[in-house]
Length: 446
Image (cartoon, rainbow, N blue to C red; front, side, top):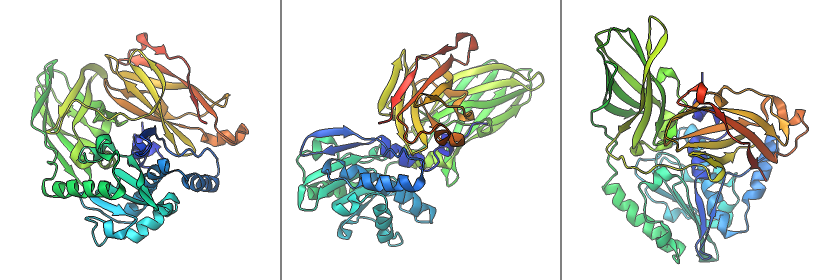
């Protein structure tokens, strides 16, 4: 059974990684934008990783200050939320200067939060800063300034989900602005958002599929503390005893790595059934509750009597009231791009190296990650999550290669991961007769 992508990231939450890897840091005085990635810790020892991270995160450059502060905030949020802390759905501002804290509830321990940030980035002490967030616990925008010159600033745009709500800190507005001017821009817009909140996600009833004497209708959507629940109505007008299940689905273009139990419904001949697509709470937190725009989904139908596949629905789309045709792009360093199939580097947490597979072909794909080499040594482990990965059209899948599986690094006397090579064995529409293998995909980890 495939694990969900949220389980394969062992030391970081998806929200934390996405905001770290998907952001950009900008030194507005130099008019220079630098694409950032997760801090790379390639040592095997956890203590060495922490030491290396702290050393790297004490940056003498204002250009990277906001990035390190934003990333450390994400980690501190994870720890605080694990201990029971909560933030409101409305946006808040947390600042190095307590007088600039905005909309922060009294029961959120800001001092403890800052102390935890300091454990990960000494830039939190070296610079003045503020960041925006909400109940998601992900830094949306971070602004850092030199203590002696508040016109020397850098900004870090983290979570694209939070960007859906905040528009003030775009490149046009931040150029030439001081720390205080950017703070005023944020508070002005956030105060308006507090009054006029983004509408809750809603879904109108919509017919998804009609064929093979079967009809599938998305009836309603509900989001609660356990996740998102989409009510599905299935009408079986055939003479077959069917099982309908969600073969694969993605939220906002990001594949979830689901299993059949997310929706698995038996429908007798000439009968009807109600079923529910249950989307994990972790996915909702990652997407930010108010930002589920669409769900791409593929259903398979099996004959329960013969245990054979009867048909599939092809890729379908469930749209909500905030749907648009844009998508979140994750992954920053493109390693492979050929005929609509793209592989990008996403980041690492010291042991797991994350890559994004983007499917812009005309068919949905299933692939295996094969011929993995670390510094020229063949990786001998086996990971179910690197096999039979389905990526629907227009969607992206996140994969993780655990370079230290079964103490691989020690067994091969590797003290530093310098290069990772692999190939994808790809089956369009899961057709083994059309299977092909990509060229070697190489990632230099320096």
